[in-house]
Length: 231
Image 1 (cartoon, helix red, strand yellow):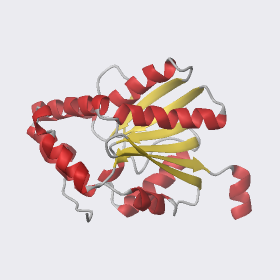
Image 2: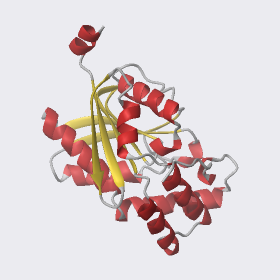
Image 3: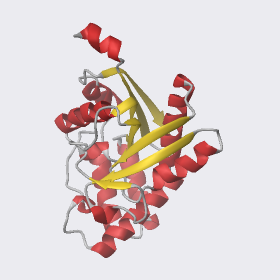
Image 4: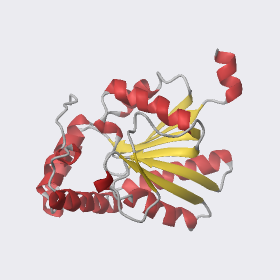
């Protein structure tokens, strides 16, 4: 299945506010029911198990309403891991009021190096073309102290068929159009690994498969000593 890029309606500044909010709430349900929250939780648990850390500061990029980090945080707390989340999105209208949030470009993060333990994103990476994804990998690892975590879709014809079958669960026509477009423009695990592998600041790339055609990626930040040796 070849990667095909179609602009998603939710990405457009012209998406009507009513449809935008309905679609974002569809995304919240999809992430709760079909592995989105579980994938992010699993990735952070992996970081905790590897590093021994129990508390992490997190920047969630392309956060929308922030349902994934919110629910993942609640589940992680029951497992003894605390995360403090800052939300970032390019549109203020995608962010809920009252949250710790920033409006900014994901490809030019407005933070100093090593500002957060983890940079995370859910259903964001497939919106980027390969060169943009590589650039985002560099930006994410610049701002991260530990790792960049990516939770995204796997492009597959069966996944596409499941999206069509799930149309009755989506209240917004925007969600139905964008759901199909998202699977068609998503990456396969080997593609993701190859693109992020070009990022010199990544020490190691781990890619795992999760429930219902989700992939989880951990791009571990190269230590200062290793970067010095590489230079």
